Amino acid sequence: MIKQFFQRPIVNFIGRTLFYFIIILVLLYLYGYSGVGEGHFIYNEF
Image (cartoon, rainbow, N blue to C red; front, side, top):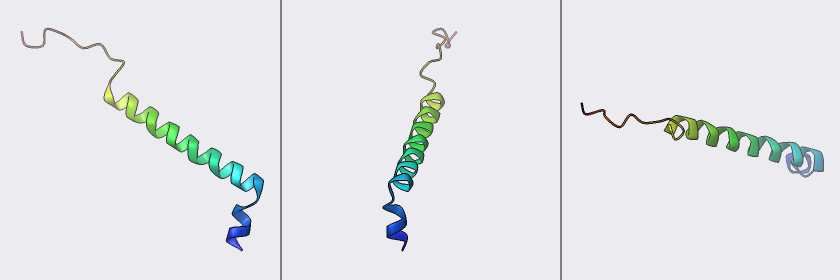
């Protein structure tokens, strides 16, 4: 019964959309957490 539910085109589409949306959110979070866009202060040692 559950297998038939997930074989419906609309359920499959919504499930894949949510799955990829979550992956994109995780990647954006990791990109922001890494600080790639931030400028680094060169003279930290002084």
